[in-house]
Image (cartoon, rainbow, N blue to C red; front, side):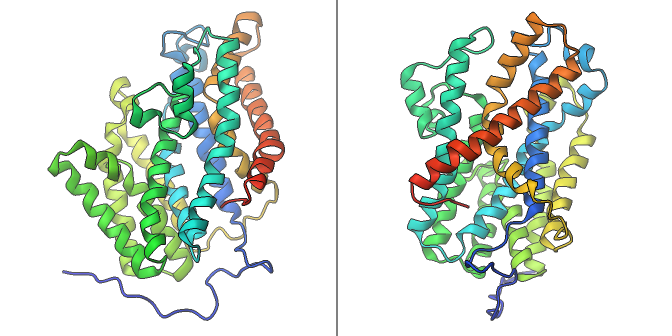
Length: 365
């Protein structure tokens, strides 16, 4: 059986009405999803991962410190695939009607200004308090400036940057679509080709192909793209087929998550959590969440990127320092540290990232 993606009739009005300045209104639900994903990853690192390394920042195993909450936080890594789905949705949305130059510029100013600010802060924190992390050598720092640590095989300034390297590769892959034209038929063909290549990469067994197509994570980006097309053009069989294939692949590949494999975590909660992410994106794409319009979500959603970049090294250092010199209850300390990181991220987003992006000439998507 062959399913052909047919270009739907061009609409006289966009599916989502534009604002007077020609831009599409911001989807508050996406910002809410960003916040949920960022908090999930932060709690995963600060509660679960923080108690298993050479330096236990809480002083004891996390099970002893947080009890049953540790079991919940241990599944916060699902925030990463949720981020990838959100990214697929947003990149497809913001790339529409843009030239390759406009697309590359928008992605550059969205990714790098906050990275430069936060990696500098992270390096200063590591240098000032090396009990938990040591700063990277200068040459490694330079490689991190443009997210080249992974391909060059040098240390990352912060281990969470591995996701940014995947994001950058996704941006470059989607540039192919922008180059030939971001139209419905081209985007669907790209998703089908990417999905098929990701599956075949396992059989071909070439490391370079695996690295290029990001087997194990590509389906999250594809799902996000498909959800945006549903949001933009309505439900179509080929789009839900892409979503179904992506969900099925996610159920297969997340079992390779090193945390689960190394700590004997049950796969059932992961299956439920990942499926919940797909369900939330489906509701968004169908317009079921359009009533979410709480204005502070926009600021918080924008701040999730610097929050994500800061929470690991800086969060670990602050917790370790305060645990050594105070007797604050661990739960209260965790809440205070997360709240402080959110506050710093809001300030950086408004007073550092945004002005730097404006100086570069484009606010980005």
